[in-house]
Amino acid sequence: MANLQSSQSQTAAMPEHAREADHPTSLVAVLGADLPLRLDCGVDLAPFQIAYQAYGRLNADRSNAILICHALTGDQHAANVNPVTGKPGWWETMVGPGKPIDTDSYFVISSNVLGGCLGSTGPASTNPATGKPWGLDFPVITVPDMVRAQAMLIDSLGIQTLFAVVGGSMGGMQALQWAAAYPQRVFSAVPIACATRHSAQNIAFHEVGRQAVMADPDWRNGHYFEHGVRPHRGLGVARMAAHITYLSDAALHRKFGRRLQGRQMPTFSFDADFEVESYLRHQGSTFVERFDANSYLYLTRACDYFDVAADHGGALAAAFKGTRTRFCVVSFTSDWLYPTSESREVVHALNAGGARVSFAEIKTDKGHDAFLLDVPEFTDIVRAFLESAAVTRGLRKAEMSS
Amino acid sequence: MTTHDHAWSLSAALPQGAENYRGDHLLVAQMVEPGSRVLDVGCGEGDLLRLLEGRGVDGRGIELSREGVNRCVAKGLAVIQGDADTDLVDYPDDSFDYVILSQTLQATRQPRVVLEHMLRIGRRAIVSFPNFGHWKMRLQLLVKGQMPRTDNLPATWYDTPNIHFCTIKDFVQLCDEINVKMERAVALNPYGRPLRLNAPWWFWNMFGEQGVFLLSRRDLAGHHPNGG
Image (tube, rainbow over all chains, first blue to last red; front, side):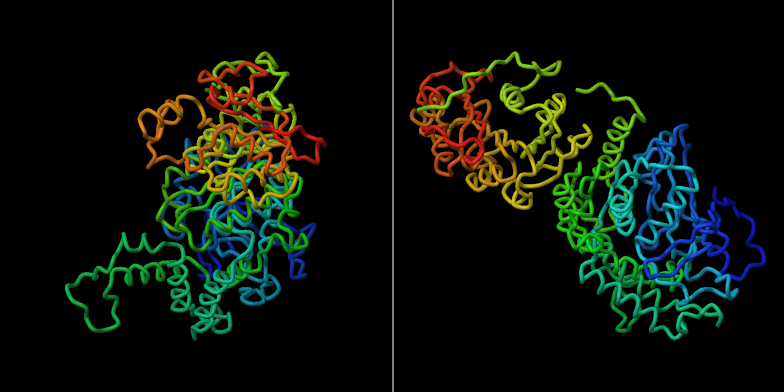
């Protein structure tokens, strides 16, 4: 068993950067002490910690565990008030009693990814060798590394097979990687609004974000904590650019149009005249309060490197050949970051590999972020898929069929 | 010469409650060997797939409508949203034992191409479609001078999803053209019951409201008697 600790009250005299990064307000598993995590870049990481939350109860035969995987800038606080922002968890629509991922039936684990900044070991964590934040000395990590770390967490909880791995965006990539790397340990997988690898356009947007961070004079080659500063402006710009990709033109138009912010006339200046401008500035400024700039660099890099097929001779179908995992792939019509065509590629590969796969494209104008929002057609399909999988898994009885 | 079905009976093993299923679905289900892998193209709300799963078939579906897909997923069926006209090309050769097109052929843009893909992807194909040669259709066109509408095909000509109607005779001709073997052929009356066996083709073409065909590649079973 790993060393599990809850560290709710260790924040008193801690330097700012070390609070949530080293001592998160959640459960923590310290892993790798006996067997290090071999990263794709060749570095052995040990020990390291993964911060996570758990909801619901694990059943006696440990067969009802669902791992939910967060997106790029998400965290472990899926269904509880986030201790940093004071806002509800990012997947309150989906996770909870009676909700599609029903914590009355399932044991839900939500882990912060390796490389994150909310308590899992990452560039904002203290490097035990130096006593200072890792910064750019932290090894470059990949999505498979994140999943291997999660697998060690799942091991430490004594869970052999996950009933489901569910996630959207980068979380969906993790779900796919789980299914490809541990087919025996994943009964069902729900990859949402994602792809098996990034398009050139996705990499391009991420590069804009990284360059914005690194162009900020306060970035200080990644050692900003030691200088008592943080690259707020660069990270804010990165978030603004990224945020546009999470929405759709229709959604932006519906929300803001070309309305002016609190004025009748343009000011003929570079103030935020338009509502959409002040919205983006707000998104940027709230983001920098909760997220670490270096972590942003590492996680965007991990997404860009991701390529499930690459480990299987370039053939996507080979990655899932003979799998017994049941898949439910979901995409959204207005998602231009991970368009439906990329989900279809996944579905075709799964089909070619003989996998049992369902696929639905949900009609919405809410863009990529639709998976975080209350879109009934989407939440219904996830609920229905998990319920039918639960019947097959013997977690629940079949209802009277029509 | 015909290849009418001679060994057909409604009493073959079917799951309980089978009487609630559509006649053509029951017929199709009986044509599928238990335990085989089946792709149902245009699977609607999954009724046929459910019937087949009751027979131990590993079934997958493709359905165009979101509502249909959602209902199928809720039933625990493996169904993906897709279009027969564009998506079959992505399926590998020989990936299924049967590919089924039930009441969908007339809604495809390229029925011939779809049929060819079906027989590439599956060892066998099962196709059912409404027979536009049925006497009621002929009569409506003849007497009223308007595109026919029936209980099974209630849409008006300008808002119908069906764009390529054909008769049983037309279909038999197409099968001959693309060189597929017709292993079984059954015409159903308006109640979903098979017509008298060994009737001549013209009789089927006139009185069959639906045609149901089990097809295979020529290379599977060697020589085939000429259809039509």
